[in-house]
Amino acid sequence: MSKPDFSGTFNMVEQTNMDSYLGALDINFALRKIVCLLSPSKEITHNLASGDMRIRTLTTFKNFIMEFTIGKEFTEDLGPVDGRTCQTTVSWEGDNLLCVQKGEKEGRGWTHWLEGDKLHLEMRVAGITAKQVFKKA
Image (cartoon, rainbow, N blue to C red; front, side, top):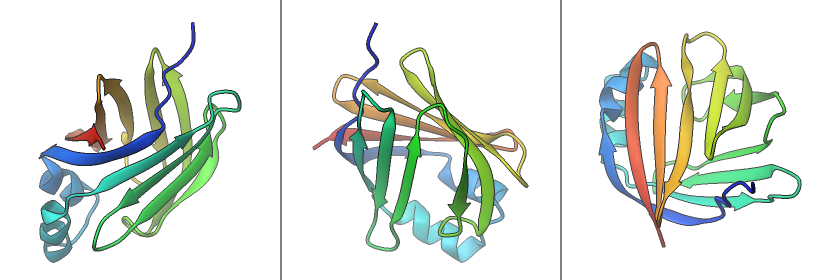
């Protein structure tokens, strides 16, 4: 059975528990408040044949680009987020993309899934979960 194609541009429509999540990443108070006010968009390029994926998270404050091949571990530079690096693997869990980020912070990672024209993102670290929902543009 084929996997879903995550390609597209998505704009955030909902966000929950982001301040607590950023606090668990040791992001300072002022930066957490700024980040919580942002309304990011995501531009995703997904090559189903090769498993290559590029996720561009764009805001008026700072942009973040993540490029990887599904199922292959890589060293991820999270400098723009929290100044850390980690060993990251993104793999399929059913029709969901599951990311495990091994490094200084325990239980760090995320899950992306599609429901209709919505892209869901659940981010986890140290027992804290935040969620964002994006709508296809």
